[in-house]
Length: 153
Image (tube, rainbow, N blue to C red; front, side):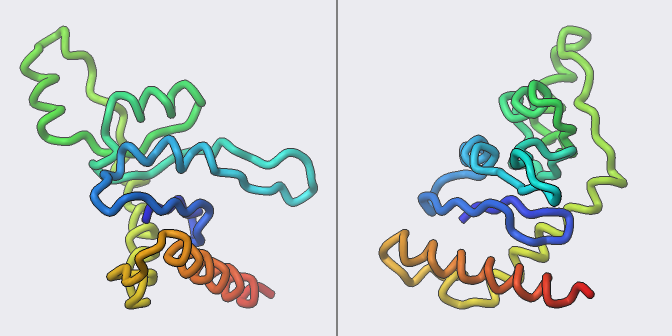
């Protein structure tokens, strides 16, 4: 299960993939499904201002994808990537831009995963069929959004 959440931890996109699949290969699928409706109407927004991710999303392809779309990447560089870059010397290029203060906001994502894992069926994936599992994930998202909207005055 892979999520894109907003700055308040509310799920925007959820993709259920194979359990053994890594995070990085799922990133383009998540971004392709991202659509946030605008308050005053008009076309849905598909390009966030920035994307915060952990080191699993630190790949050249993901950084290029975000840069081509004008999205700031707040993703730390993996130690092996830094080592390869430094070993190449001046041909290795500059380190990618990283804002450690902005990266602190990534804990919102971790808190979202912790809330999802409170549902035992989602944490252990008892369901054999992906559609049944996804329906539980969507139900959890609906409850999250309903709680968030009822808290606003």
